[in-house]
Amino acid sequence: MTATAAFRRLALDPAAQDLLFREARTATAFDSEAVDDDQVRAIYELVKYAPTSMNQQPMRIVLLRSEETRRELMSHLDRGNRPKTASAPLVALLAADLGFHERLPEVFPHLPYAKDLFADAAVRRESALFNTALQVAYFIVGVRAAGLAAGPIVGYDADGINKTFFGDGTREIVTVVNIGRPAREPDHPRLPRLPFHDVVTTA
Amino acid sequence: MTATAAFRRLALDPAAQDLLFREARTATAFDSEAVDDDQVRAIYELVKYAPTSMNQQPMRIVLLRSEETRRELMSHLDRGNRPKTASAPLVALLAADLGFHERLPEVFPHLPYAKDLFADAAVRRESALFNTALQVAYFIVGVRAAGLAAGPIVGYDADGINKTFFGDGTREIVTVVNIGRPAREPDHPRLPRLPFHDVVTTA
Image (cartoon, rainbow over all chains, first blue to last red; front, side, top):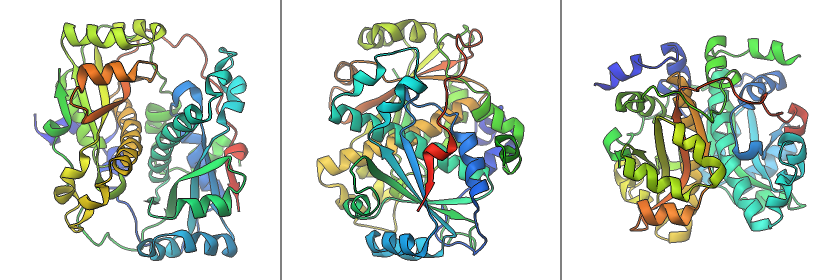
């Protein structure tokens, strides 16, 4: 089967396939059109349904709306990433809540001792980082679902961001995401993806 | 704005929103209809386009198609997860390739020294686990895009799975995913999701 024939086997509408995956590109420069809180709300209210282990939902989002917080973030970014973030109408910090287990009695109520499974800080952190990464991916898909482009960035001084924004140590930065409408077509063609047979094997 | 009004602001078609997020549920029991390699190919050829940092694409998938490998996996699963996997027509191991950096000259060709950034094994592992988690999330969305249900599982003896399936230490299990058509409606209503204002704040 060719790749094109494969696409036709999906239940998802081809236009949605394009919007979320095939035509979506990571954005590195944005136009000035604002991204408002209602758009972020629309994204969250969709992607919140995607699964995390034991429904942990550890991801927390901080929208940087003030000049001061934008400037503070900028100083912690790798130099090459600064122009990208400078041009983004909205910049979000996606962080892991290391105290997510406190919400388990509410979000995983049928297992009353769920919270106790995460009493150990190292176990808790590992689970928070893994499930936040899942939610970062869902969020990126959600940004695209809103007709916007995402520019996820991990090139920064994480300790610096954590000290500035999460000084009490209860949260940890996982990804900075620039959000908006792309200013122009991407500078370079899409980077190569690994071929199916290099990724998927049978045992 | 109400949550319902928020949905209407998305560019993604409402039917696609339902298919991927709102009506999709984690499956714990499956019917016997097979999931063939062409379906997995269709999923991969779609979700491969979703972004990873520096285009690392560290996720590797092993489809367990033989009775022997299915039985071997079963012995490493937490007891409560075994019936779920036993009923799944297809079970996939989603693993992190700890040697992903060897492919960087091919998938991130404009930065010739990219591979050297991951010379340190701990740095490399952290990046592999993070980016594999992103790809696990994209894959789950892709399974749903194929009209199937995913049942991701992390309750298992990871060391046991790694020894059995990745004995050379170059890969590490991240998630087991059961794939198929759900046998019935889920046993319980959807678990609660955290409210918007508990997750998204402004600074």
